[in-house]
Length: 151
Image (tube, rainbow, N blue to C red; front, side):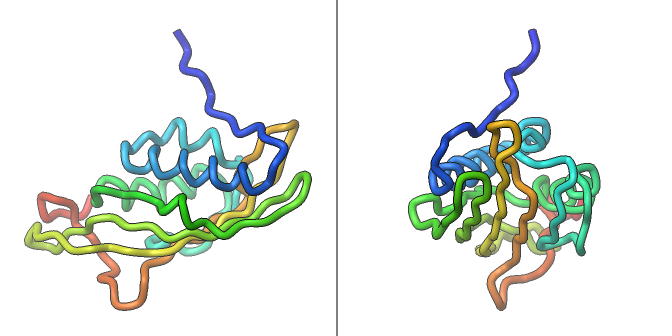
C-alpha cells in the first residue's frame, strides 16, 4: 500500500504557512525525508545552517537535511508565533525553532534558530519555493550528534 502524499490545500495563505511549518516540524523531528519532499517544489532554492545556496530538492535534502537532522534532537518550530502573509497563490512566513545540538564529546546544547519560507500554490497545492534556516547568533555552528560524531 502506497503512503498518502501530504498536501496543503487551504485557500488561506496564513493557514497554508502554519500548516507547512507544522508539517516540517514533525517531519524533521522524525527524519521523514519522503514526507518532507512532498511539501517542497522540485525547483526549490534554499540555504540553511549547513548548506550554502542550493537549487533543487535533491541538493537541499543532501546538503542540508541529511547533514543536520540525524545530528540533532527535539526539533520544534514555534507554530503559535508565526508571522505570515500572502495572497491567493503566494505566501510567506517566518518562525523561530529550537533543537538540541551536540558537542564533539556528545554533550548537549540548546540550538535555537529562525526560519523563513516562501510558498506558492501550484495546481491547488501549496509547496515551498524557498526556505532559509539560520541559527541564532552565538549558537555553535556544528552539531555532532548524540554519540559525538558528525554524520
